[in-house]
Image (cartoon, rainbow, N blue to C red; front, side, top):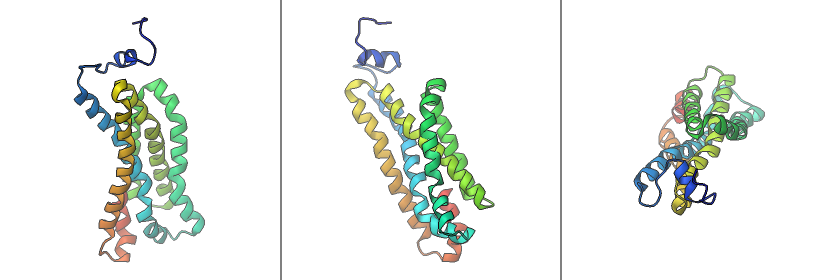
Length: 196
């Protein structure tokens, strides 16, 4: 397999089936942008709790310990997801792990919007954290692997841009959901819209 080429050069690009010089940069940019959606979901899922925690505390009658757990359980899931993502990526492939992360995000969004009790809320937040952790490892890795060396840094930076964009988007979403609404509505329904 192209033994004359040095490792870490265009050989990596050829092996990954990505275009070399003269290939379709539009394709690379598009695939990188789609993979960076994992970063957008990372930012959204991590930041959503900031606008929802007050109503969630009131809805479930949480003390300060349980409030902390409800807010941080996604980060625990994130640690587990990041720890497992490398091994899963090696066995399943990067694309499959990115898709699995997206499925975790989807189930988590629905589950945290419609929990019947605090345990369900925490479990679904943890599941979302698994997706966040896996995406935080796998998305930039996949983008780096499909991008030619000469634009690799720019393409990988899309993921970081998507993360901070996700934070920005969720702050606006939370603001517009809460704006002008009564506290009672936020406790009963409003926080659900923030997650879902």
